[in-house]
Image (cartoon, rainbow, N blue to C red; front, side):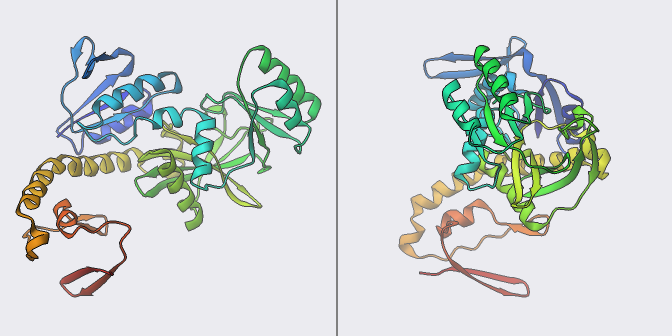
Length: 359
């Protein structure tokens, strides 16, 4: 299988590409600055350095918010041709803090109280009803950039006037005092593969590694892990970082990062995070590649109308394990007509599994 990493060529992207070479036949590094999307009636295609992009079974797309529209366009064009860990709309949601918070709200993910104002008058009304200090954020920005702190109404009001003069939208968020400490969790699929606490340096309220913060390995409890995994699902990312504050209310999510740096958390935890990501991408790519043949088999089964004739089908195959879990072929779900909404009884004996739907 062939794979590609689309990125700006950051160290973390190169780390992922290098680890992917252990699994894929070939891995290309594609600079997103040299990509173009050709639009036309009934036609959508991607070109790289003037040539039509080749075929890949896996494409890992990463990049800053400045390239979110390009990444979304490329993913729309390629999503049905290769496995891609981030959905097209996620590049818009994940690179906009307001849209991210709306997604978190929809999935009932705990987060600090957050406000969005569209005018100076509305903004100052909010400022008059919040407890200080507060946090002001630009909707776009990474590595802690675009985050400001106001100790009083007067300070916040001055910042507000400046932001509106510059025609800059912003979020107002309650300040959670954690002593300059936050948690970063790397979510891969349905698991947190690594987590660390980041401590801000003296005089700095942002704990980001790029802002001088120091990382140390930590183990998350099951509730915090669940919140991190649900956050990734809420924005449509199979791979991302989730930043969390520990508060008296419990874990609160402050941000999701679609293109997180990996050096800091790799050094802090001694976990090969890029390797975990590469292995996951390979397994998902195998599943994606097998969908075509399984879909064809499913269509044959539909033509034979097995449900009408009540035939019992037997399939001879080796079991596919994902970690300690058994992954059944897609044809099994196609014939059984079972869905995740169905309640089932699972009967287990040594060397035998029977799954029946509860009517």
